[in-house]
Image 1 (tube, rainbow, N blue to C red):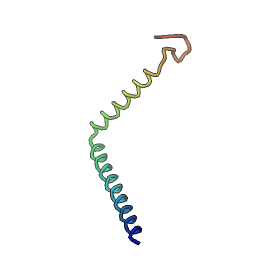
Image 2: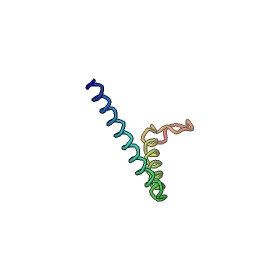
Image 3: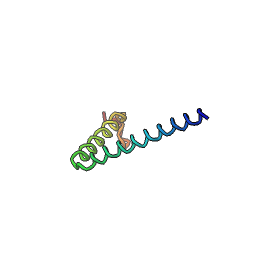
Image 4: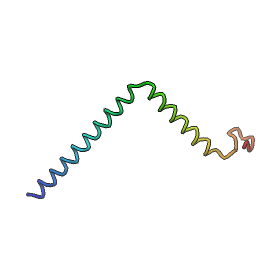
Length: 70
């Protein structure tokens, strides 16, 4: 009987921790999204990083098939 109670207590603590973390994370995320300048800057940074990744993956052959472009 004690093992069942301890297991239930541990599960309750884990569930409470997860719920607390998710609500804290969502509150932080909403606070950031309310500032349009922060959202714009984050999107710009995401686009810049995506462009850098695409450039690094490019091997020099252009998409039109006209040979090596450097």
